[in-house]
Image 1 (cartoon, rainbow, N blue to C red):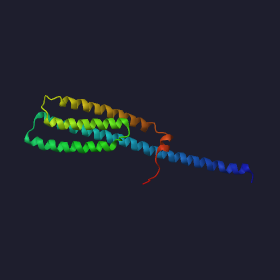
Image 2: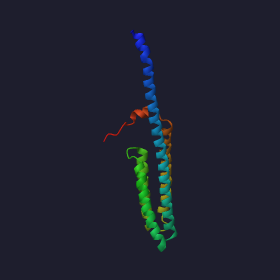
Image 3: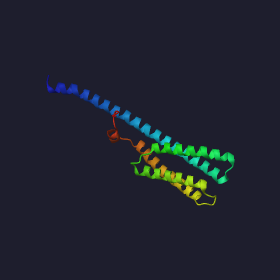
Length: 167
């Protein structure tokens, strides 16, 4: 057997191996992109729920404090805290935009707590609106960046991906 015969036999095998590797990389890429899109959706819904809870709490406090609303305010306060903790789990302190959003969430929590003791004319109510808007703007930036990452997924992202579980 000469080298031409061996080479002719090995070329289709090499092409099949490269094709298989490319298919596996494509499947992994689709899985990662799908996971990123799910993260975007879950994060968006969690933050939307959080803002809604804060606004409901704010309206109870602004409208007065009848006996029945105090229990609802306590329930909402617990839900706000739980939802904030859930949002925190979606974020990464090592990323600047995420850290900035986490600090705004802490600021909003402080403002909501202060709102209970404030009067209706107190500027804390305006501060809450400003902070909510800043949270929304920061979230939009994070979501846009995550969406661009999901759309423009490429092979270099697969090389950074950790394959397998290593305890």
